[in-house]
Image 1 (cartoon, rainbow over the protein chains, first blue to last red):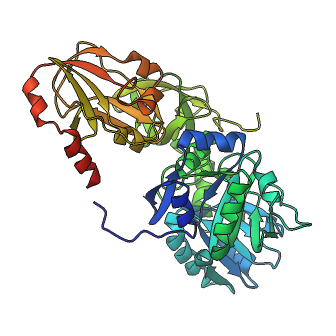
Image 2: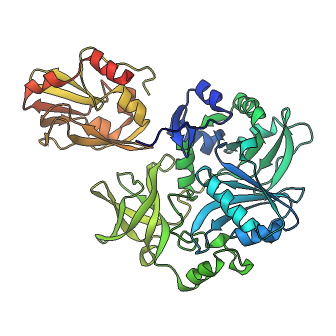
Image 3: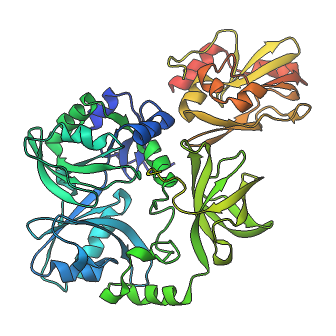
Length: 363
Length: 130
């Protein structure tokens, strides 16, 4: 048994209970894993619109004259390329290149930055921000206690959110952000998400979150839990920190070299440059099981009957109707089309390395 | 899914959330409403082989939902004489009708006296309430 600690509630906890959610512990929070059911919620996001309470995620504010050089030192992407109102994905790396977290940073109109962290890593991310901040003229602020966060995702998501905008407001494009009036409240609306669908993520003061939640449901958006969030992200091969990468993996083997710009000299960049030049022994691949069987994290991966890697994330894909997953595989077996086997609890299942994403919503 | 919880009076229950319908020397096995509700939408059920032996308190098959895989525990010992192939191809039957069309296996009992160790509906409901 885990030691008994009080789980934290988001400002939407009462709404979840009212909507019939099944609540589970997640990273110290009590969060909805499902309402109507994972498959139904998954379909709602792929075909219509769903809303997720992601208020457990953290937000870190960075302001001050050296914000840009500070973040350039801290995160893996080239922060200089981030324009006001823009969004950027990056890794937060340890000095040895291991991945502490993956982050979305937004450059706000006032020149400050807002960075969204994973719930489980928020505390350690803050420590890392403050450690590096000692060398810069910056203020690092934990903004998580003030914010609720809702992700509205799906082909009809923008239309539903737009219906709540004050006159003259316009939603930000994909990978952009805007401060807008939503109903009676100020909100930071970001054209980002974790499902592969179009949609927005909304940061709003805690006290305004329940009214926004109810307005979204009234506009026809369906409540969705962490269960569907996981199946949706895995179909489009978005990484889950703690499963698909962590401190023991560098971004190159995790397939995140695209968001690492070593020339900026960020912490860990030398080790990552070396890994990029030399290649890595293993790579994170996506795969699908063609027959029956559902892979799960920890399942061994075999090539020709010999151990070749481990599954890091696995699930049943509601869209494709088959078992899918990601896992680390020795690099020589990482090309799409490679025949592999997954040892699913003692039953060896035929599978194939597939190109990422496993499902492309745009098609 | 069967929306309302239900636990038929005529069944006997195993604490691992399995039921047995005793018919003379054979019994039909399945999982309870609570088990299917906890798992969520079941997407995979691999029936055991007809002729295979199952042992009380030991796993004899597995059911898998989008979220998780779960061993199914044999409430009684015996030999599998029939399996529900329909639930293999259409596993949501287990959610929709866990005590009817969603049954899993029929077993010829090797030790019918084992039935005495199973819970009646009152005792199973009490276990769920804890």
